[in-house]
Image (tube, rainbow, N blue to C red; front, side):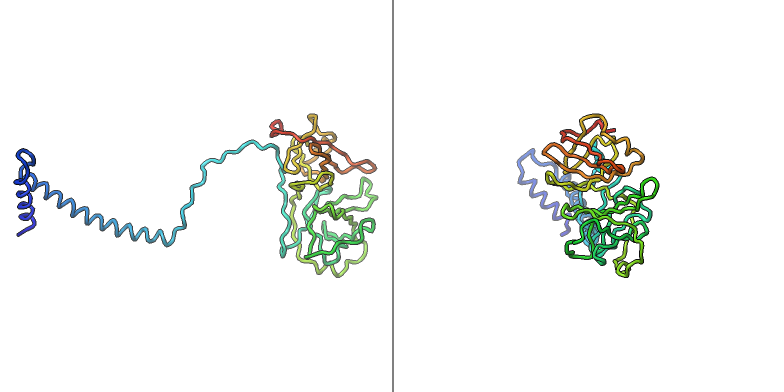
Length: 303
């Protein structure tokens, strides 16, 4: 007996068992049954094909594609900065062990701090900077702390002979640690010692150090700090806080508007809400000082 005959008989028996007026005629049910059977066969074949194709495609995905990550935001909101924290120059990170020593630019600008690694090979007696060899002055500390490693991370800046060039050029090496006082160097007048040639390889960078100071300064401690010239020096960011001078202009700031390079200064937080900035003095003058007060807000008037 064929499938159609079996289906017809089954439907006939079903029709006879139904109450009068309930089910539709047998021929109608047979036609529906044929359509249903064709639909089931099509679905079965199509489902098998889809399962096979999908399995092969998914298999490739599983093997080659990494885990999906959330898509990045199409637009990132940019909130107004409370202050150009570092001005146009980003703070430079120190070198890592095994990397070449930081040396500053081939031709540094006078009065600008640059990242510099003082080599321990010569006992910190000599420095290679500005294409010259410098010798440490006898005026500073002579007993240097013992070192672990081949370098001391810090900053170097130099000042040319003032005005008539009668004075000797001076290079000053400073660190982030108040425990190590600044070291003064002058151009070497004699022969270059052999130990200088044994220093690790050096690298050059034109970027100013842009020292931001420590994240948690101690009150009363004087720290190396590069002051940005943005906003007329009205604002300072130090110790993760915003500071501002009382008036519209920082005293003596006009002197520094020659270029946009940061000023090699020092910052001391003298109380909870007051900090003093010290800038380099002119010959025969006391260091210029600017007092800043801690403020709440974002400094939106900075233009």
